[in-house]
Length: 128
Image (cartoon, rainbow, N blue to C red):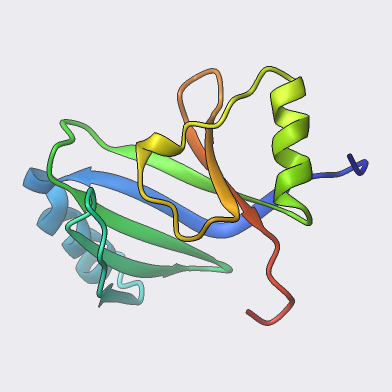
């Protein structure tokens, strides 16, 4: 494993209960006046999503019908997902890919000890 296997990705997802979704979207769009745009999504657990430009990051406001409270999910990127997954396994951190459908086969969900969900994703070439 390389000396710095992970870095923060640009994507942050806030999983929001359906009952609070519209008010949350309005907060980012109308009160904070950030760039908010609804995006199409086909996902069995996320019914709607809005992209919020948040400086150099993208915050995804995800409507999750079966949640009772909000959760924040983070993105980690690594040059080699398979190598990173083996490293994490050796450190007793196991994948939990059953949490939500993955965007592709070269990624995994993990959790920190506090229960924060992180996606381990392949680094994207600069400019993507």
